[in-house]
Image (cartoon, rainbow, N blue to C red; front, side, top):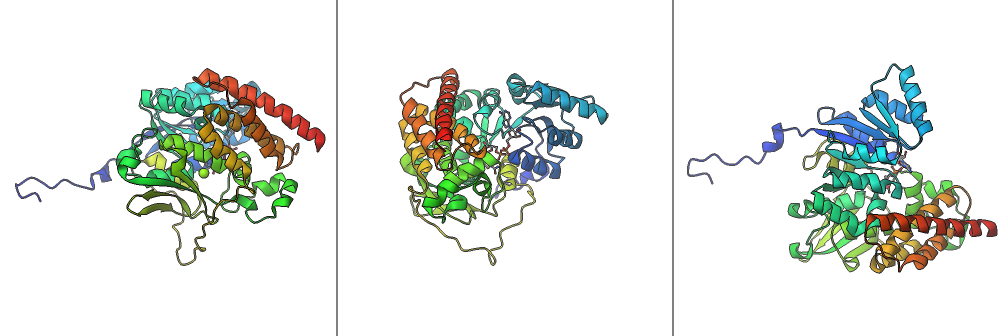
Length: 420
Ligand code: NAD
Ligand code: MG
């Protein structure tokens, strides 16, 4: 008590200080990008959009430019950039700097006028710009799990060197982050979970749209069926990854790096309702869970405003009308890609980089109608086997291996296409 005449320390001192952030969104036209803009639009006093990027969707980017008036925009090609510029001019907007290509993406990610970067490009194309943001010491909101999967220790070392602040957007990792002691939240990649009485990370997954479908019919699955996730509305690549549970495999590897844990300390738990977004188990028997309706605006708002809490437009859970909480063991015969990823996590960086590259090629081929759903595993397994012994010591090694694995996987896809 303050019996010596001193004023008691206020525990509510955050009330008057609204933190302002200057934001770059890499991949603003995607599912995560649009949800990020939805949160920003709700809090104009907190967030200013400095830069946006998109691969090819010119009309969506035009609408975002008119609504958010960024200073810089990066498109995937010269053609897309020229088309956007023309349309902006037709709307009387001539003060947006429109560029294209990878170097421009890295430039907006490390721009001095930006303090927060949402890394929401899909696939390993997001690696270099995300890493540029990390190296520049930004607050990096990491949705692009593939960048961490493909470069692991190299990425984490860059975070440590630059002092970048890494905040997980993946709902599972964001949930785990929220269930950690506050001290550990400030040092992703260097957490000492055992010292804090933590015994396990419990990574939940819904099992996707085919959890109960007869396994022998999976080869006939169509792209639209695979993308119809029961709980989450996401981009097509991650939707297919959720159907194969490769997404949980990538998240397993992501969790290893983010929380500095060994594979034995991570357990995947099937939870079909996606109400619990993941859990942390403590030695004393406590299990902390983060719950909510499955809406990515919750983790995005959490990370954007961290350590404050802001309205995300998400309905609170209605416990009296919530479906039952169910939990199941994973059946690896149904989800061989998850087993492959868990094994790759122990085999090392080359296995993880090759697996991610093979998977990106395989999923694109499945979405294009070139291979069967069950062929994705064949491409992924061969990619790991082929490159597992390669050395990966620096980012150039990552890029080289990523390229070789893509070429190899494309050749397998061509063979499979021939057979189908
Ligand atoms: P999406 O396909 O909806 O959007 C991807 C974005 O990246 C788009 O803006 C697109 O223009 C851009 N892009 C695509 N290819 C590119 C390239 N080669 N170069 C530059 N930009 C490119 O994807 P999404 O669902 O928003 O997912 C984005 C990332 O977030 C992925 O890594 C995914 O795993 C992760 N994530 C997504 C969700 C979700 O709910 N959607 C949840 C957790 C994690
Ligand atoms: Mg996730």
